[in-house]
Length: 383
Image (cartoon, rainbow, N blue to C red; front, side, top):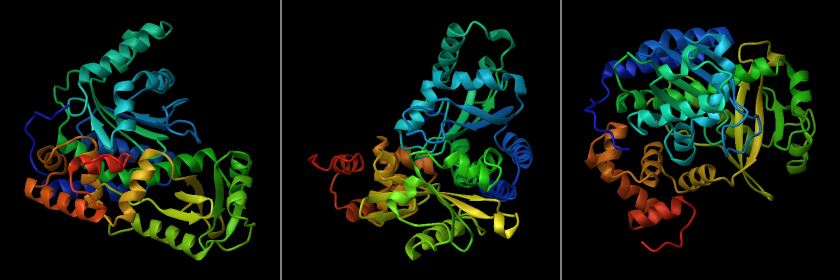
């Protein structure tokens, strides 16, 4: 769906507002601090009445946002959390767009018609007569700004403008949340994990038997917990030091989310690690950042680089694309032309064209069709 509403470029005041929000996000350590931050910062920044955030299955491949749980919300009574979570699988217009496109953030009236989401909500109430539609806030949430946390799609946030607000979201709103998004997910995931897995012993009990390779390492990169799936890939024991290359990747991840915060791009390079069994993506979450030294650590998950989003990012990173070029290449994959990309990223068409030229050179393609085929994992398409 093309954006037709007139929008203005991001101003210096917008970037200062984003920096303020990002700084406040990184100061959040608890559920209540995160909730206060979103209530004070997000509702004001996006002129919204409510927001809700949560996650799905801990080890979900990403086919759908199933078994979702609302972790917390502002502007929404807790008694409505359950039926809102049950409605998430019905909101296919939003979730499928996020899962199948290369966009970090989508909004009603920008990426999907607002009526589509409202129709999804009506289907939910038709199938769930036990919930009183008239008492629910769901039908009033006419405008939604939403983001999932790729590539696992386990965490999500929705920021809502209710009926009567009268304002649609614009590309400016989308871009501002895109720039905030990497920092939001880093802290939000840490807060949610910290509460769900209150200490290392609880963590070990929870993660010992899951199929994903998981380890917990301290700030010196020594293993303090490892499950069987991890040991099958890397035969390491508690107390051992991580391989130097893996430790370097974790160190770089720390720098990404330390001041001065980077706000020029929403693309974040994923950390990849090669072993004889293949290429694996490192999913990293910092736990207990301000706790006692012995309780600090990184939750490290190794996931095969096999699903489309991860493979595309690996291809772009190995091709040497910059963060901006990764953003543009992803939007080209979505079918956007240069004008649409410029509007989405608030840059000129001339700048877009220069980046596209560089992308073609780095990935050794000569046409847009060939680039799209390559990003989709099909480099046999003639361009």
